[in-house]
Image (cartoon, rainbow, N blue to C red; front, top):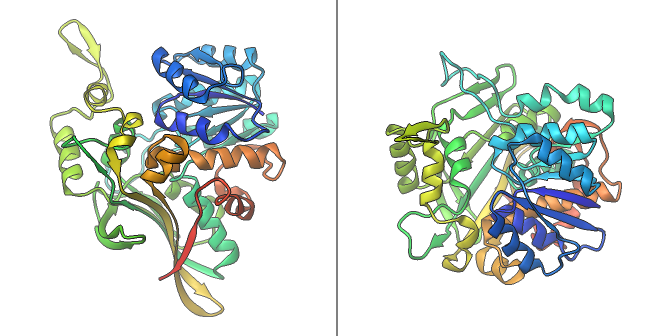
Length: 401
């Protein structure tokens, strides 16, 4: 398999590091806007033939198409912030390559009633074009990271193997990660974090379809495993809520994330003074997006691994019935930062996000997963994915609640 990796930040690097020992990966073309970054990652990988580097502007569709054709790639892997999804997605269609991402095209809040009614939903741009992809006989696999991605596979696994009826599927994410030396240092892209945490969260209920609520709403306490402990989780906009109901029969879908009071306070402050704005404003004679300034002022998550300690937990809580009896399970994966640094020289959050994409490549390459059109992880048999997790260094656990 030949892959064009668009974006070689923390997650892009982790994808390449996890994939490098897989013999069926013939070539990964490393691309990024930051020339020094792609050289740094290529040096870590140590094989210039298998991991050639190319400068790219992911906002320019014609550049993506040119590189895809030049290297005759089978798959275009989108490892950029989701603001670049549309040109990368459209480029893959034009060249006839399989497309994969870890976050769907962006939403736009409802202009008049943002905290009750959906506007443009996550992934609408992609799903509106699903028929064209199907007619062309090519596959767009959206949302195959950890959340979304692994969490969606867990939901499908539970529906297939653990439950007869499902009342609610709720993704629950928490960690006890700490970053030494910084008062505030997000361990994932702040651009993406601002987007998903400050947009109106989406909830799905049978009979009501998708609807929105206010950011940071409906707090609850959730007990995370492996010493992470009980934490408050709140509603956050996330792709699982938009994906799960398309393929899994249930009554309700939610996504809740543990952010902590400090993180929520910072996000609220950024919003209050307009620094979450992704549209460019004029600063003297320069046009710049305030959110890009925030990202530039914070440490790069890709280089925080040696300062981090602790664990991160991603998982799916399912409530329903089996054999006529009430049942609740939490199916999860815990990544330890020390382990991830030893194995891949990548911090835990980006490594945990990356491995699902590589398993997805594996299943597609070997014909285990097949499909055309625009599909989420729930559209495929979950058992082969789950069976490969331990081999890739990310074993799962099923906990009865």
